[in-house]
Image 1: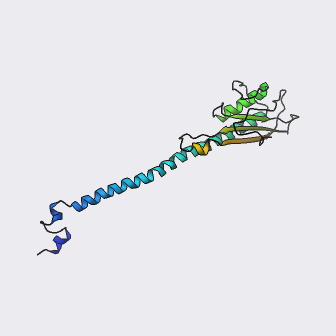
Image 2 (image 1 turned 90 degrees about the vertical axis):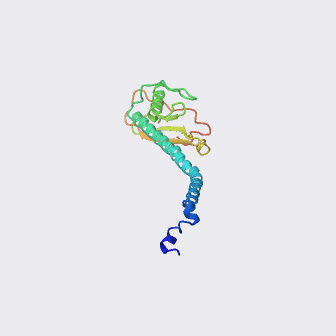
Image 3 (image 1 turned 180 degrees about the vertical axis):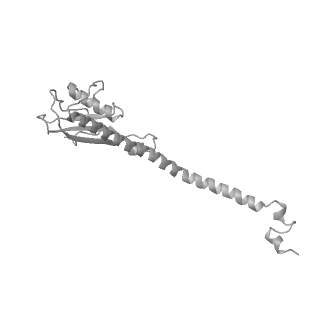
Length: 191
C-alpha cells in the first residue's frame, strides 16, 4: 500500500519516474530552452531595428543641431563684421569675394560636419547697413551610419536659415553668394 507521501513525491521507489531520475522534468527543461530560443529569434530583429534606428535617427538629430548651431554662429559673427580669416575651404560651384569666401568657410568650420558635403548660401542686404537683414543658409545631406535605414535617409537634406540684423558696418562687406545646392535641392527657401 502506498502512503500519501510516496504519491506526492513521484510514486514509490519502483515507479518508472523514480527509476529514470525524473525524466519528465528533463523533457520540460529542454522544451523551455527551445521555446526561449524561438522567442529570442523572433524578438532579435525587432530589437536590432530599434537599436539601429536610435543610432541613425540620433545622428540625424545631432547633424541637424550641428547645422543650426554652425549657421547661427557664422551669422552672428557676420552681423558684427567678423567674417573669419580662413579661405582654405573649397566652394562647390561658385567663386566668391574674399569676405564672402571667409564667411562661407567660417560657416562650414562652425558646422563641424564634412565641409565637402555642406553647402552654404549668404544673402547680403543691399544696401549693407546697420539694421539690415543678413541671412546665412546651409544644407547637409543625411545618411545612415548603420546602413539599415539608408532608404529612409538617403534622399533627405537638413536645411537651416539664420537671419540676423547687421550690427556693425565694415569697410569691406561680403557679397551675396551661393554654392551649388545638394543634388535634388535648391535655394528657393533661402531669400
